[in-house]
Amino acid sequence: MSKQSKLDYLKNIYQRYQKATKEVKKVILDEFCHVCRYNRKYAIRKLGGPFPEHKPTPTQRKRPFQYGTPVLVVLQAVWEAAGYPWSVRLKALLSDWMPSIQKRFHLTPEIKKQLLSISARQIDRRLQSKKNQIKKRIYGRTKPGRLLKHQIPIKTDHWDVTTPGFVETDTVSHSGDCADGLFAYTVNLTDIHTTWVESRAVLGKGETGVVHTLDDMRKSLPFGFQGLDFDNGSEFVNHHLIRYRKQHNIQPSRGRPYKKDDNAHIEQKNWTHVRKLIGWDRYDSETAVDAMNDLYKNELRLFMNLFLPSVKLKEKKRVGSKLTRVYDTPQTPFQRLLATKAGDLANQGALKSLRKTLNPFDLAKTIEKKLDRIWNLVHHRPKPKTEIMLKSCPKKQEQMVTF
Image (cartoon, rainbow, N blue to C red; front, top):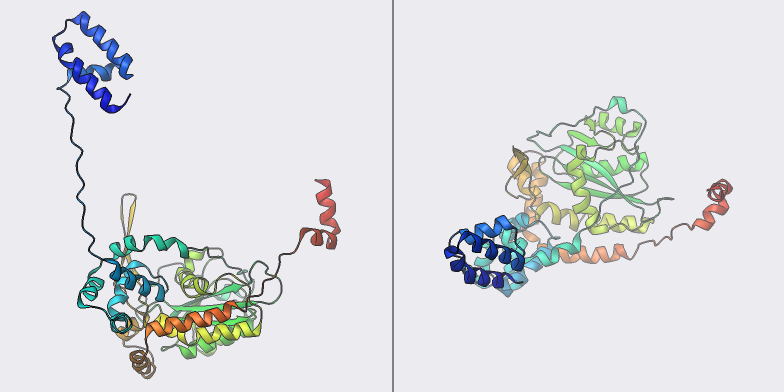
């Protein structure tokens, strides 16, 4: 029985129930419960209450679409060129990229006004259908080192620095499905205060190669090293790095084993600057490493640090069981660096002049071309078969037969 039919039946018996005697009311109530399958107490409240009236369904106010197809086409193109940033960051870079956007799309004043006025929440709604295409899982192959840990202090508290130079570093493996043999790693480095990122590829993670890579990144930074924080991998916990940090007066620190939150800043950059672009395939040749470094040292470095804004966590507010995070205004790493008025001022001036001559859409296009070249150098190495593993290890074969 439908809801409307039950309401009509109640209206028909309501007046009769109100005027009936106690014995007749009992009969009407029994029949009402049997027909409508109501609980007796609920039926009594229905028949004893006010006369049932049909409440009109409230009409939902339909808001007109303010942002048309031309605005969404430009918005999606900028979003893709910028590497699919978060809506708050995307809104911040729209005004920063506007000169290049106007040259590329020849915007009308109305479209420009709508692009600059669209909210971050509206961006999320408009781009929702495209969001799930870029979600992937992050993993790593870092093995904890056993040497010299007692010489490196553990840092787990919040980074409270106001000057550039205190950095976190990590390695990202490019081993694919098989971790055997020699393969490429990306050594990733990010500054805590400015969020500046430098990346380099190296074949294997030998101690000498990683230290040489860190030194190359230090020379490329527009500021000097003051502190270096890393995990417990053997590529960082070794005598080579200790001699290097003493030579350059660098303060070392490390996170706790198996606690990625201690190195949260660099773990974020491992996704945005490496995994999201290079992926999880295997690269194990010098050619692939050279192609990655050609991208890391040139277009990607300039694109990420000069044109892509990021947000930093200011504070956390807890009200009962709800935790609210408050972020600062999105800024590019270069803007944060200029605001500090610290570091290599000559290098910063050169970067400022270079930025005026660059077009972020051209950089994004060049990055795509170089990524295509890198992806063509993937080594598709098959997984070892179970039969071959059993033949090479008779003990495992006996165990499998036993079980």
